[in-house]
Length: 138
Image: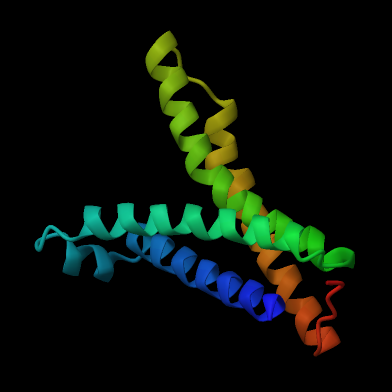
């Protein structure tokens, strides 16, 4: 049962990631939503859901004792989902408080976390397809 819940949360997380990226990079989505004033509301709510799903994925991955390399990929996916908005907030706080341009959290938010999310997601899917039946130690 918990294995199916992990995969449901995983796929929801991937779907919300697609929504977040599409509101940033796909011009038709921006053009359609901006005049209605819906873009900020959709973007912010998607970010909140993204973080909550990342926390849930981390918790369930540790709790259900998923074995092997799949555990590493799921943890990487969840940690990247949580780390991205946290890095954005820390970058803005440090830059605002110290009046300097802070590069570490900026690079984490723009490069490390999205790449980590994609690596974790692709690795999890590849392992699931390769094994066809993911085994859990519960």
